[in-house]
Length: 109
Image (cartoon, rainbow, N blue to C red; front, top):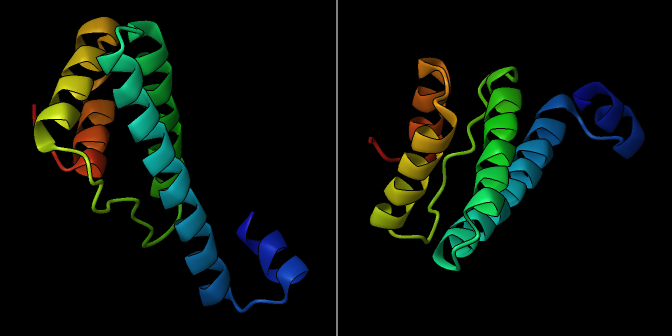
């Protein structure tokens, strides 16, 4: 994806990587906010879909050297913890997935 973006947009590799990271951070922020909104409205299954989107984004970012999706989420730590705890209880993910989400969301459950 990065090489294609570099060619198509005529960006150097660093510019393309920065643009990709920016787009992924925006998408991650949207997924997190939507998942928390769903959880607050009692749509627990839909909240899980949002967290699964975060998992996919975090896994992709892990394959890109130096890319981090961590950011100022502008969502309380307690809500991020609640969402992650709900995901863990519902899905029983592998330890590495939990660790990746904890790092991404800036919380430990």
